[in-house]
Image (cartoon, rainbow, N blue to C red; front, top):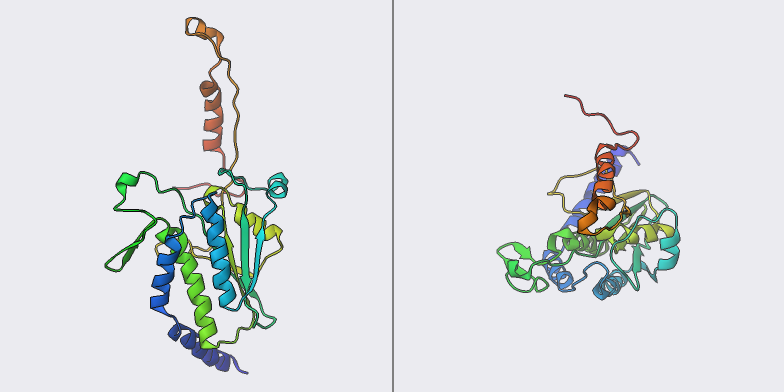
Length: 261
């Protein structure tokens, strides 16, 4: 087939998938996910993973839902760090079954949200979503349950339109993004990889082609307690930490370009 022929075919398939997008279902799904209070490290973080596993199964994907071996992950030398205590963590991956031998595209999103903070600043329960005009209010509406719903909507549209994929689409729903990256790390350790990845973090509609990532770690600075009457005999851990703070502020990773005026 000619390049022009491929372009025509691709355009037709794209149009079919776009026509199959169900906006009403998207709105319902977003409200449904916000209502699950999946704060990082909470039992609801696991609850939403099981809920989403059912959604992926109903979309006809090959679903891998597994309980992560936290001890093994924590002991791994490349573990990215974690701040929230956990008794369990679940990984979830769904892969389309009706694809060819082409590349695998990963759609990735985190299911956990930060705590609601000061409840007095909320108009009502943060986990009871409110719709004001065309805006949805609720903890995690933007970061990033709307992104999760976008993935589900794309998969549903592909299935409803009957588009035949040249490769596969894999959905990675992960926990722990808000405190280190446990879920993504555990998913990679499970062996789930792909050729390209789209992460639907809220970026005001701007396409970001890379990110710096983050590393969570702990610094212990010893001091020496002393009575106020003889405080010169003590050692301030805060004072001892300040050179470390300055060194961290001045540190630049290898390969970081030097700003120029």
